[in-house]
Image (cartoon, rainbow, N blue to C red; front, side, top):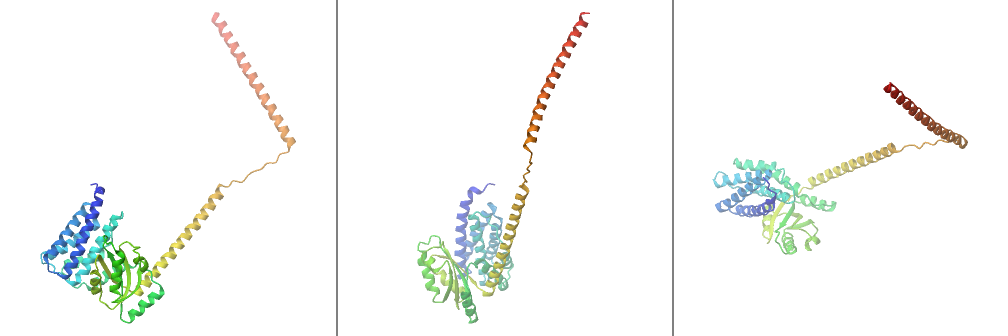
Length: 346
């Protein structure tokens, strides 16, 4: 089935259903027993799954199907909504959103969602102790959000703050795409969180944020004693904020990650140097293969004149011989014809 012509419609409608999922999950967190909220989430997941399956985006359809099963169980009172499962549900929708964005950018929507599927399976089986797996989910989030480039001074501040009992968080804020005054919203968020802690770094820079030189998403490194959930809830209250993702930040893990990146860059440079060296050798070998030595023969002029005279005489004699041969052939042919005529007359 040819589905390319429906791609734009699919992306637009998928984004709408994802907005519903985000909004209703926030509502569900406040009122876990409200049946209308549960129905809204189930319908959005069910519709998104059907659309993805029709468009043959299997990873997107598979993960949405898992989410649909969870809320089907909640509808039938087979699964109870627990605070521990909310992070997993939000993280599932984050993955779905990333898949749709990948498709919108020309990708195939494929994504490694093994960890979150394992979490959803545990929820579907009725397991309530999700603390251990939530740690792995947070770790996965951290890997996804590690976009900040921190210097040694900032890392020192983060290390000392952690020793003094503060929490280091990487906060990603996404504004609504219809937000008209992005700079004003950023100012409101900064004004809010600076009462609760200290912003160590931002991406883009503070000046770029104030001048609205960013799309709709920005990331902050934040030090605070505030609880993560409360911090997230307070930021979400700012008008036109669509999503807030908060991840604990580990200086040790960050340094380890940076070291691994440096090692990878060194390997890449080494590999490039090897390729360049091989290319140069290949070019040199090619040039060597194509070069042919020039041969020079020295001949005495007098000898050359003698050779040329002999060659001319040889050509003349050859011409004479060819003429004599032609005349002999003609004479023999004439004699043969006459002989045949005499025989015929007798």
